[in-house]
Length: 195
Image 1 (cartoon, helix red, strand yellow):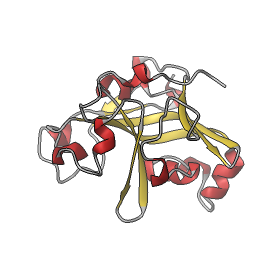
Image 2 (spheres, one colour):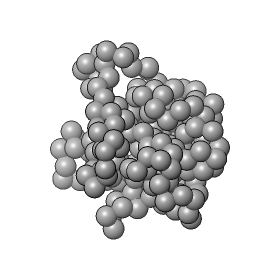
Image 3 (tube, rainbow, N blue to C red):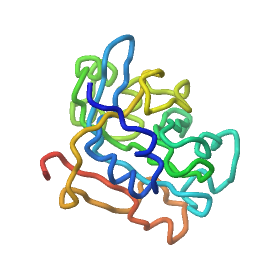
Image 4 (tube, one colour):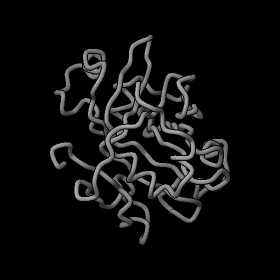
């Protein structure tokens, strides 16, 4: 097992953390089996002033986790059907989080395939709701410490991605958000073939 990322990794600005999560390994221990993948896409959501961020509503029961310690999982339900996994970032008290949008599966492939039955391998985990379904991540893990194996969900050190391998662009699925937030280049992604 590789070293688990410490809380200090997440205690930095979400724009730094979101970028540096690329190449790290998301791990889920499900019924004793390791399911894992390399993080290849993430988005940053930063503070109450970011109108695309849930924290724009301030401190609520839903956003409470975002105001807590860095390195925790912020998991929410959307569209009445999908779970989304975020990593709380920045100093405690400042609400920001990096949404994990896609991973490249590396371990537990048979189990992941069964959880995404009928889909081609390229579509197993190429979206935020797809990766939570594939890894069995739901609201029961909201607030989980991603810097510990205690709650069966954590992030391990991987292979850092050089800047030339990273593409940035606007965040996805925030069409109703006004500028400048709509066009902020706070989405980070890479294709392993770009290395």
